[in-house]
Amino acid sequence: MIRRMGRPGLIGLAARTAVVAGTATAVSGAMANNQQKKAQAQYEQEQYQAAQQQAQIDAAAQAAAAQYAAPAAPAAPAAPAGGVDIVAELQKLASLKEAGILSDEEFAAAKAKLLG
Image (tube, rainbow, N blue to C red; front, side, top):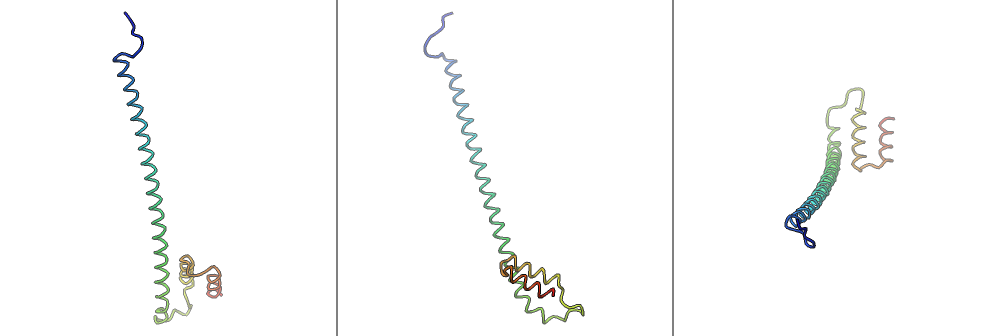
């Protein structure tokens, strides 16, 4: 049998084409996969930030509602002989501090006044 020198035969050409096409498909698939992962990570980060902002808005709304509801509280019947519900008042102060309405010093002063 005589072996050809130079250019590859039909089978060699088909094999080379298959290898090139397979490599291109693998590379483009990997690139698409990486882009999809990046897009998913960015989407998750945006959702996390939106949830954090919503939590801050909810906390501020609760603090504002508590602040406006507080003047109406004295119109209610007087507390039992024990006086003010300290735990509830401390929770209100903590929510105001978390919402950024009270500073650390104001919170400490109000807490000391309440406890003391």
